[in-house]
Image (cartoon, rainbow, N blue to C red; front, side, top):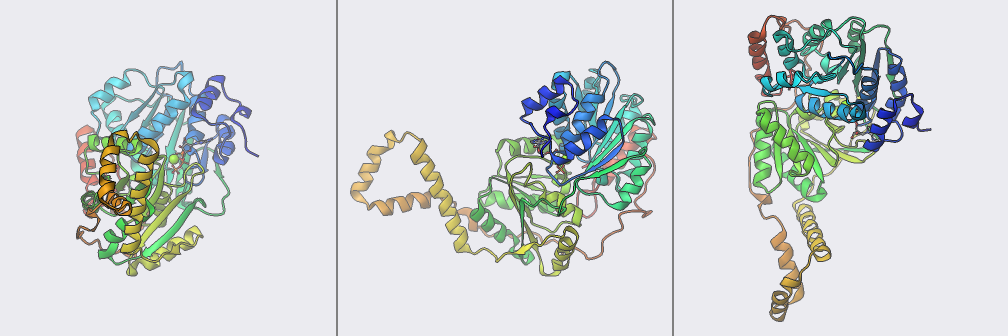
Length: 485
Ligand SMILES: Nc1ncnc2c1ncn2[C@@H]1O[C@H](COP(=O)(O)OP(=O)(O)OP(=O)(O)O)[C@@H](O)[C@H]1O
Ligand SMILES: [Mg+2]
């Protein structure tokens, strides 16, 4: 039985916000965690991608923060800038009728502007760790009044690349604060680590048959590296996604693939950690508004992003590990919608695919490679749909005379065929060669306990913190590093 939000002990203001957001009944993770969090308990909340974990922590935050306090009462940490912005917006919506001020603080944005915004005394800040540490070092953010701290994508945040930053940040919050951790994936090591930051916490995991969302159809294509681009564009033409995200392994790959797709006539753009924040913001805005249909991205877009209308996820390159697979494909099939996730697997990577199947306990079906003929037919169908839309919606009065003239001279079938041909894209078969990516290595680097990725604490002063982050952002392999992406 679904739990209605009205059944929770929430303020009228929050109930009103939820109503305005169009939410009536709570999702399972919301129903299970909100009452516990409202009691003030620490908790780890785990549920599949796209099941409303943000609102599960936004409600307790908004309800429990003392909004008469002029200091920061709520802190949320996220691994990426785009997620930081998105989460801040969602919390703002939930806190709207309580007049809760929420501020996002992330790298790449003018720090002076953030400092000015901080003077408005936000009740809650949502931050990426790197930029928050800059503010802590400058004394422009103080965490001594934080009542509640949330780690979104907790397993990622407590993974090696972030752990010291997180520890440093949480140590500046009062010990008696409430701490909430959320993610779709949670390794046992993370839970042990998390105990350090939490008091008597409860682990609430929504029982599910699978780690991945059943509404996502999962398929794979066995391809050679050099076939990938043609297979992708054929699939795009056949499946005609409303919005698609295509994951590439490196920044170079993303740039090249984006260029190739644009050359072949797709509305595509890219997202990765070497782009300026202005570019990143513009791309995300266009993607959310439907100004682009295909977003090509590194794993920077793998976690948390919620863009409605994403019908397809393509793993152009295999994800680095199983968790990355789960999060990447979880960009579709959200909030009860269906989606398709297609993974390209080179012959040498097939074992990785089986590993994903074993861990997720879900079979990924092999699909035959699409042919040129199927792609052409797909494109023709698209052209026909476009034509039918014009037939049904547009006022064609001004075209009639010319149409009649043409029909006197030519056969009608010939004319319609020519119209379809003119509307079909001709640039799909432009030959393009992408730089080859090496297949995924079988050996995985250890994710915990290794010494060589540790580094000096960044609580020494601003210039050093800044320099070291710059270095870490540029992973030699061209992958977006685990640092604030
Ligand atoms: N109770 C609800 N009823 C209907 N829609 C909801 C409800 N709660 C959240 N949603 C919507 O569901 C979508 C997914 O939510 P959200 O981004 O919080 O998922 P998530 O569990 O955090 O996923 P991920 O693991 O990918 O971060 C959002 O668009 C959100 O607005
Ligand atoms: Mg989320």
